[in-house]
Structure formats: structure tokens, C-alpha cells
Amino acid sequence: MSEVCVLSGNANKELAEKICSFLDIPLADVLCGRFSEGEIRVQILSNVRGKDVFIVQSTCSPTNDNLMELLILIDAARRASAKRVTAVIPFYGYARQDRKDQPRVPITAKLVANLITSAGADRVLCMDLHASQIQGFFDIPVDHLYAINVLCEHFEKMSMKNIVVVSPDVGGIRMARAYAKRLGAGLAIIDKRRMSPEETEVMNILGKVKGRNAVLVDDIVATGGSLTEAIEALKEAGVDKVFAAVSHGVLSGPAIDRMAECKALEELVITDSIPLSAKGRKVSKIHQLTVAPLLAEAIKRIHNEQSISCLFEVNR
Image (cartoon, rainbow, N blue to C red; front, side, top):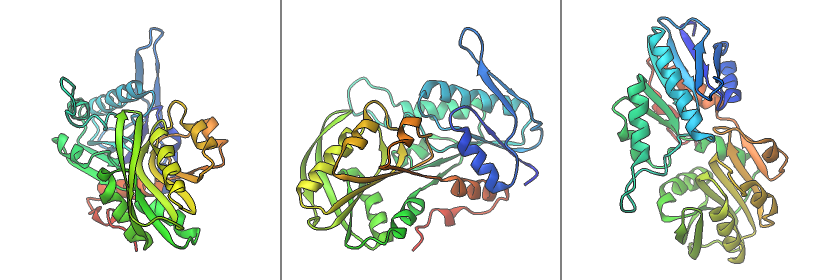
């Protein structure tokens, strides 16, 4: 791995350090700060000439700052004569704006893909995109990983019985089915109506949930409004215990308070694709798992020109 160089911006340096620990290489030295007027200042202090460079940067909050850091880091690595530049984006911001669902709105997920490509990235490594079709927004290779094995291993260690996996909406059925297959569980779906980007109304619960332990699975929890409403609906339907497994813990606005105050929620399990705030770490119901081994293995395989299809498979 001597020809591999891992860089990081300010978005999730802790995850980048964990990845380097698994790869047994040091994290490259990068200056990533601000000029007095707020412009982003980047300088790669380590030598990357002729190396296979992987830039670890989630485009989480502050989204625009972290996205701009990623673009500038890509450009800096390319101009420093890196052999290949891979953007490792554990959480892809703007992914929810993947289509025109209203008049006169942009497809921002495509715009971001164009920016990353134009900046000089040769390929992208990402995880649990909000919409799988975003892979097609890029004109460069995209490797799309899933956190299902990491999350399911946590629930398997709990040795729960009589589990039902619940999809929070019709669009998440495919993901929920994969979780149900891995856990050997039943499957249920929440039929809801979206009132606004942050507010939903539960209409029906499709499937047998009464007296069972529910695992509510989703890719993103932002303000937590939809999640807590779904949890309350499941509890009213007679569910014994409710757990939530979410790939990306955005946890913006009142989300952390909502999780702490939701009596029906036993545990919210998220990954470290997004750093958990100090406030979030104090909430005992929020449990964070690392995806560093998964990303490290993918980086190793990409560098060695090996297939990474085995990382897409659901371990049984």
C-alpha cells in the first residue's frame, strides 16, 4: 500500500484516520483552512506525485463548505501529479434532489456529480446513496457500497427473536427486503403521505407487526420527524420494541432531542459516515457504528485492481 495516499478535509477526519489505521498507512498531511475573508485554503503537504490518491470527504453539514473543500482537494491532487484521484464520499449531500418532483426545481444531485467530475476525480466511492440512479449521473466509474452488513451484525449480536423489518415508505421496500432476508425476519411497510420535506403523516401499516420487535430501516434521518412518527405508529399498532437502523445520521435541527424524548424508541443505530455531535454522543439511545473497515477494504481492492463485488453481497 506504499503507493496509496489517503487525504481528508475537515468533514470527517476521524473516519479517515480509522480507514488509514485499517490500511496501516498514515493519513496524508493536508492544510485545509480559511483565508481571512472566508475563502477555503488548501495545500497538500505530503508528496502525492504518481500515487493513487483517495480523498475522504462526506458532504454533510456544513454542506457547501465540505463540498467546496472536496472539489478543491481534488483539483490540488490532480495538479500535484497524482496518478489517480478517487473521491471517497461516505455521505453524498444533495442526494435527495435527484429528480424534478415539482415545477421549476433543479436536479442538484446531477449538478454536484458534474462538479466532482469537472474538478478532476477519476472515480467515486460512495455508500448508501439516497437514490441508486445517482450512480448514472456520473460519467466516471462509481463504486456504491452498502452498510447493511455492518448494521445487521449489530442486531444479530443482540439475539433478538420475532423480528419484523419495517420500511418507512414504499420507496424503501428493496432495502427493507434485504435487511429482512439477512435477519431472517418478516417485512412490513408504512404507507405515509408527505406533507412537506420535513413532515409526513402515517396512513396505514402493511404487514403483521403486533407483538413483534420492529427494526425500522432507512438511509437518512434528518430532523427525525418522519422517523418518530413512524415509531409512534408502530407502537400504537402493538409492536413490542422498536429499533431504528439508519445509514446516515444527519440529525439536524431538533432531531437529537426528538430521539432522546421518544419513549417508544429503544435504540437508533447509525454509522459514522457523518460525525456525531457531542450532544448526540450524550444520548444513550443513539449508537454509532464505524464503516471504516468496509471503506478500507474497498480502497485496497480498488488500488490492487481487484473486484469489489464481494462487498456488495449480503453476508448470511
